[in-house]
Length: 359
Ligand SMILES: [Zn+2]
Image 1 (cartoon, rainbow, N blue to C red):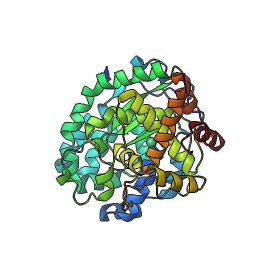
Image 2 (image 1 turned 60 degrees about the vertical axis):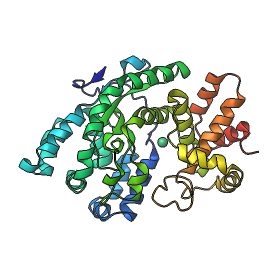
Image 3 (image 1 turned 180 degrees about the vertical axis):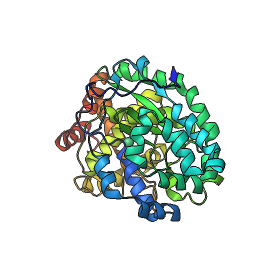
Image 4 (image 1 turned 120 degrees about the vertical axis):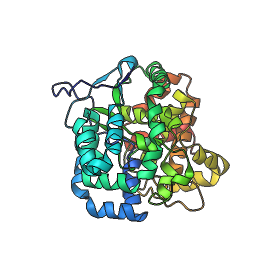
């Protein structure tokens, strides 16, 4: 069931399943910093209006509330209330003004998921209102896509059940679909997975004009990608951190893509995978030469800066390492458990060696 009225408040006494901070698909954060700095006048203005230091502190702080997690994929709540509230506010802009409309009709009725998202990724309501105004044409174009999100429940539920069968230790948070400021595709908060629905409303490239730029052209996706996106984020939810090196970060993203592909049959970064397949020998040599360094600028989160080859090739490299490991193991469920429980840089290196991909 897709929950449309989320009446359950946070339970501060419930156990927190997150042993450590899980800052999600870090790429969205990194990408936002890139786009706001480099791309558009809109986001340049956003940079000036955003106080980054406290935002970073919040991003890496432990969640404040407690999560509602369980091992039953059928008990996961898929919460779309905030989308309906956003459109109420969007339609009231002319009467109330955007900031006031959002404040009263969107934030004023926020689910626990939107409350988290506002703290983690939106912060200033005036900045968010400005984004909605400047990109109103794009937001308006996403309405039909957002209305379809509730119809993905069977697909999402099927994916969740497959995940439970593949990885019995999986824990499932609730999933909140919220509307953000075109900066975050997915993240996690104390309430559960938080999916930025406006990032999955792409219907017509002609709408990706100013104030949207190359970065948005690279990352905005159609709503039909929703199930594999949630699967990718759900893998991150299970994972530990694999370190800050190119190898660790690429492996973390690539494992998320690989397991999401096992669950849905779809690869989120198919273009990068195709390019890697066509140039694997030279890319392997380049990757191995730089994989212990922390510089990921040529491999990850470079949707606005990649020249001459696809962005985010690190996802594809990580995917191929995970796939090579999986194919070598007789027991596939054990292989999945092993890749999902990697938890440090040394483990990432051993996993690479065991995969045979480097040779
Ligand atoms: Zn990710």
